[in-house]
Image (cartoon, rainbow, N blue to C red):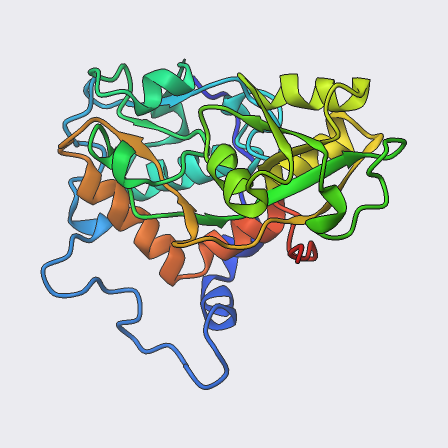
Length: 290
């Protein structure tokens, strides 16, 4: 169980101010700005703390190996984008911090069609049609971009465009969307090298085994500043097709999906998601490579 929770005091104490900031100058919020559309579920309509969870009165959350910026320390810390997100969702569904239990799972367990050992999982999972055939996704909580990282002392340290990386060995995480994004960006102009995990790819980058690494840009910023400080995120890959959006994962046809989505939707409407993003993520200034 979680023993302590840092509260986003500024965000929650001034909810009205944040909600205003989330609206355009010519799009002032109305009294019913956070009300769901007709027929939609509201988090307040879900019986607080009495949802049909795996364990009565407890919200069980799946996560894999914790790393910044998603988790600062253990998931129970409440620090990091997804840790803070989970506790905020739990609170809106009527679960106190001590009612949240975390369980360690692999990414493969999260996206497979097997019965889940969790009520929901938070592990930077991109919503795709293929995955949605096997699991449920909540409403998206973040639109993601793929970042490109190079070693500061590598042969491609001065790269500033996609063309500058022609001929490079580019690492990707095999089971995630970085593989497809890299293939669409470069085609056969680079040699794509898959890794089982982003950490393995970053280790290969710093040892010179690959020349660049592609991963979620927010993860890449943390990797280059916290874990591998002799590397730099030089930009993001161009958008290809539908934007990549992350969602919480639930068992297929879970009775919780609508309520979890309603909580995410309300967080989007009242500005809480924006506050979480600006508090924990640092990729806004990273430009797209051309």
